[in-house]
Amino acid sequence: MHLVRITLAATDLQAMKTFYDRVFQAGFEVQQTPAGAFYHGQIAGLALTLVPNTIAQVRAEQNRQQLSFLVPDLDAALSKAELAGGERHGEVLEGPQGKQAAILDPDGNTIEFLQQVS
Image 1 (cartoon, one colour):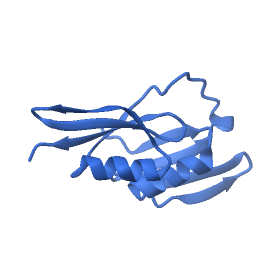
Image 2 (cartoon, rainbow, N blue to C red):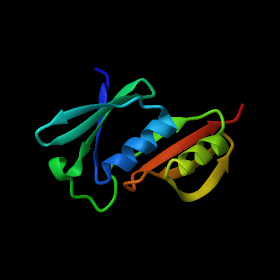
Image 3 (cartoon, rainbow, N blue to C red):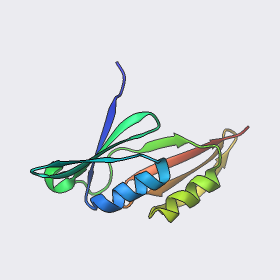
Image 4 (spheres, helix red, strand yellow):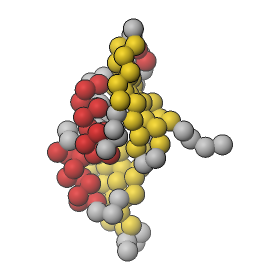
């Protein structure tokens, strides 16, 4: 068994598309449906689909999942995410294994970036 796709219900579909394209080079392609546009792309070798929350009708006060990415340069990843519309969530934490920090995407989902000690 292996994970093949992540689908995110987006309140602000265009902002989410822009964010994931700029930060992760998702390469989205649009699929027009009678219910609205879906965006299909890839992040970290995994299929990612963005759908309008008006279709998915997810009712969550905050995200129920967190994506975590290993990055070679934490500061560069944070900067790139902020320039793409993300917002820092908390401080950079440092420990014996490396540094980590979180970003909120345009819909408020947390994304964790991890930089290991080399």
